[in-house]
Length: 296
Picture 1 (cartoon, rainbow, N blue to C red):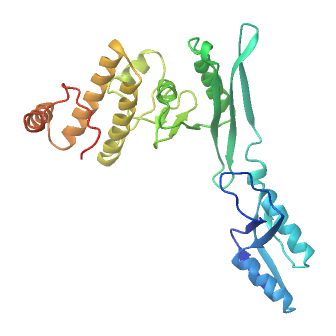
Picture 2: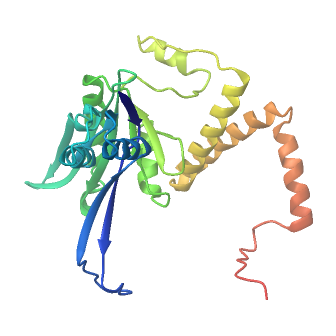
Picture 3: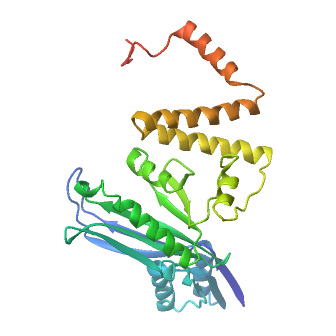
């Protein structure tokens, strides 16, 4: 008996056209589905040569069921693991509506993601929308807070949300709710009482004064540098989305992080100012509001 294993089976979808019409609707004349994967291909050849074999591997969803169906139709022995991971991936869903003036004016949709391999749960905040005329009523904040509580009840500590890179309003909203920017369009949040981020030195003391117990640890030098860099990006977003007095406060926060980063290089605020002055003398400042369009 020969066993073949395909860890990532494929289902190819071929569509046949008379002619490809540019910038127009194209309709197919026929379509074909073909299964694939190195192990599966070997099993097909062995079966045609009358060599006893069994195709093994992992399948999921429509593609997996179709591959299994096609192999069975050709009498190719197989014993695939039809993973329940994808079938149960979103088995816990959350949909809340925001009501105002006796009508639905917004909603939040999310779900739990189960990592069976590590026996952990996380959550995805998939959609959040409030009608423009109701966005000054803090309805989005209420929906996020409720979603965080629901995540905690379902033992999902990490919450993921994708935000368009140019959606500064959304970024500011998630920052207010302690979401942390991880990549350009990915923010990570935590269920209530979970923060997982660098905080000011007196924050543990303030938490203790409220009869709560902070759980902290001291970062290594490398971790500290990485967390400061994350904090700098967070404060940068806060500056972009703030105005008036709040913007001054956010600029001050950003400056503090820059000073801490400078200290890691054995430099001070004075050193930063000295370098800034030299650049100013050599290349000028930004006070003249000059916008360079092109160079001919």
